Image (cartoon, rainbow, N blue to C red):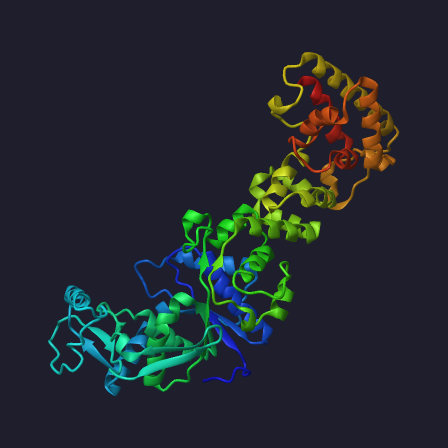
Length: 500
């Protein structure tokens, strides 16, 4: 058994038979945090021995998702499909040593044996009839099975659950090599974990029953046994195993929905691990504080509301420039080329800064930015305006908006042409109210004053202005945007109120 204080080497070993599952991400995270906390190595292994179900697109998704999450690996990934001959040779080695044997029973025959065992009140196991078989029928398909001792027990210490013991009588002579020559999970992981010098195996608790089988293989091969830590299962809100019926389960789906990688990692870390009462963690804090002493044994419940809250919290603590880079990378298809160019500027950062306190998803920032970086007036749906079919109210509000347009126009009329430089040149040379000293507080005061003069509440006056300026009935601060945006964006949008 390795020294817990020796150089830590851990691995994450997904199978590319589907997109990277969020439960797999939690396993990868706990491995990564443990390695980083102990200044060890984090390895990635692609378990693609199931040649029929494994697909390259899933492998690419795993690699891309891991990079997006920042769960970087320290050595070249291992692909099990490139090591099939190694596993076959290791199985043959066990046969030569008397720790494995060829079994010529068909799957149908084995199924009958298991059914019979169940009828007799026994565990549904293979009856070992080929265990001492000496003849080898020529040309007949066979599997290679491990020769598990019939008496005694196997036990190991789990870093989360403590000592665990299994009776050998309860362990089947499990298959090592299938009849098609493919290795099974239990053989390939032991061979590769030893090859990679893995010191700690950190995985889901659904693998606890595999551990005694693997312990026997370590003993058969006379390999050093690593330390084990089995993580609690993740359940949906209905306390059943997390699945698609509970919502998105793949990492890339959360990226598309607008979750920040650090928020998703923060959320997943708290699914089974804690550090006092702290809920919000930076990645560095998770690295600094992580230990198995505070990983729970009981299952963790996936709470989408908490994930959304955490994401909003991380969005608010981020720099606008960083959020803008995420938007440009993940949501560029939301924008026209001109709109994207405008978004990727200092003005774009200021717009992000206004939006980010009010949203919980990065995607929402992108959606709110689109009309704000679009030149000129934008098309809007006015059916949700309070004035509805009240013609007199509509007339009064339009007159008040016209009044505001005139007042703002007087202030901007004295503004010199704005000389924008660098990337900001795409916003043109029109000045903004802010450029002539009109702050958002003064915009607020002026609209209140005009509303009083026309007998209109500020909320009623601001609503159609908000719609035509931002393209939405709910948006970032209207007064801040009226002050910030160039007049050649604001002016045609204020005029558009007249056409509603």
